[in-house]
Length: 87
Image 1 (tube, rainbow, N blue to C red):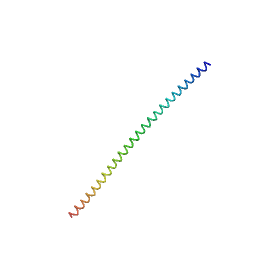
Image 2 (cartoon, helix red, strand yellow):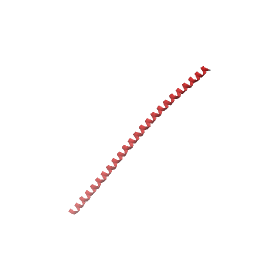
Image 3 (cartoon, rainbow, N blue to C red):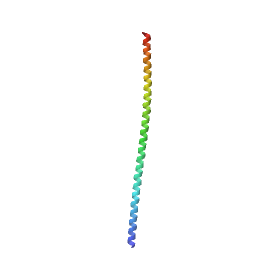
Image 4 (cartoon, helix red, strand yellow):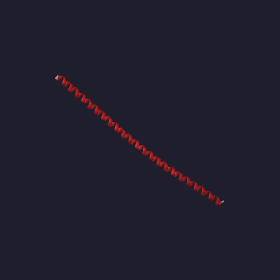
């Protein structure tokens, strides 16, 4: 009976070691998953910032283009006025 008890204890310790190894492996995989999620969030954040910067730049370009078109229209009007005066 003493021999059976030792085998049971040995088997129990082997099972505990296996469980501890699996627990460690699971924790490691979870940590890697968390790290990947953090990296993905950082990439997404950078993409949002880049998109916002591009949108602001596009809006600035649109505003500048509109101003230039207004100035061209004013200059055309002034040229017409000058032509009509000189005729």
